Length: 134
Image (tube, rainbow, N blue to C red; front, side):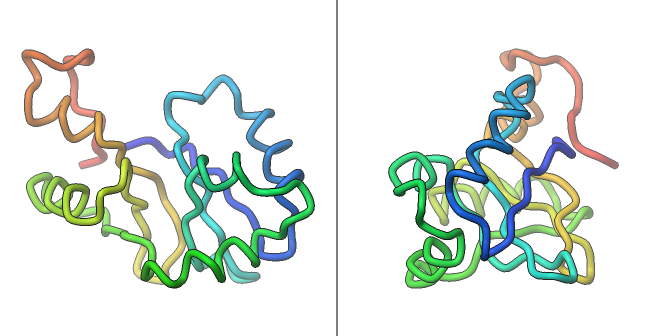
């Protein structure tokens, strides 16, 4: 799990979010989406980098999340979620990562698909240590 989570608010423009992503360039392998949070820091939506890439600069994050709502809520897990359950959710939702949220819905981190593979296939993975918080 990575604890690098880029967040945005509904009122931000896509250009503003892209600027924040540019500041996080050193974490490019750990970021595949942006968690949209409300004023209390609770998760509202999860916007994939692709959706940010193809959106107009002046589009608001709120407009993107309203459009994404048709596909259902973001796929999330709790810190104690078993690895096999995380793998099932990744496959079922056809996403490349899962947001890890606390009991109040605040993002804590993200489990990337390669984290799951590294854990399930440690002898084949590019990393030979567990990246999940225990």
